[in-house]
Image (cartoon, rainbow, N blue to C red; front, side, top):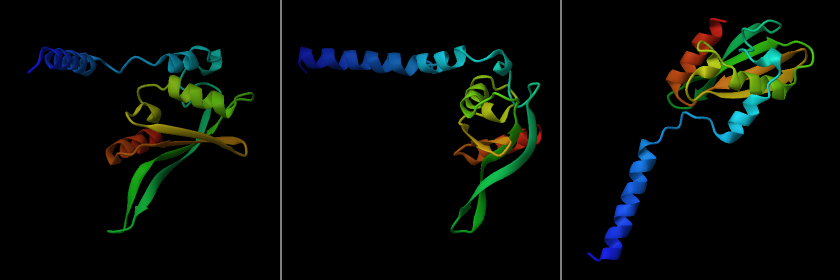
Length: 142
């Protein structure tokens, strides 16, 4: 093998080793800046904070064609929020301030927030069945 090939292979191996040892736990700069300017009323988990009220919880599921069965995908939470809170504020607060027992803190959970009348609808879903069941369990505990 030529010396050029061996240098390239050695450099590639070192790069792979460095990438495999790195952790992904630190937030990206975009996530950190999105969470840094939350209003004081949204710095705790909005599902348990004062002024917020969970008024209902529904299980979400999809229908599998064959064999016919319902596959759990997550939970839908209906939340009444204080005046002045927008969908974007609630989404940022839920993703940045989720407590340990929150449905949003389940690994792989995704969140969609919409408004229906006087309440916000939070759809917390996960692609894995086990994560979806955990989301449903935590949502019912609220």
